[in-house]
Length: 88
Image (cartoon, rainbow, N blue to C red; front, side, top):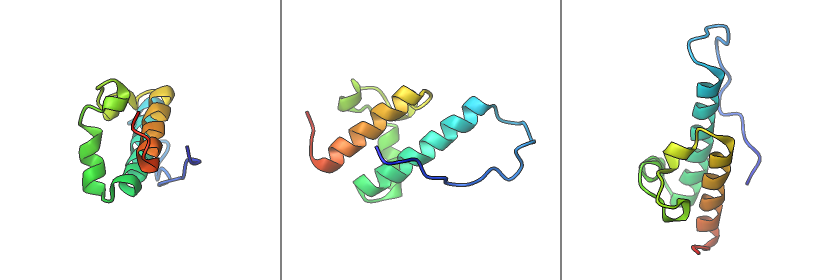
């Protein structure tokens, strides 16, 4: 998968209202939305895709498995396969 990009810097890292795990999850979601937007053609389609069961993810919702780095890799790999026309 492409190298991660910095989407936005945290304006107030001492705020402490979100855990590190939650901030990682938000970062993974934004990265996947950027990739899905490129693959699917629009941000609206990308956001909708995150909440639909994906056959390539054993019918799991992509947004549900982004909580872990391995889930992030699975979703990213699936999007890259879709982009390249590999559906099996």
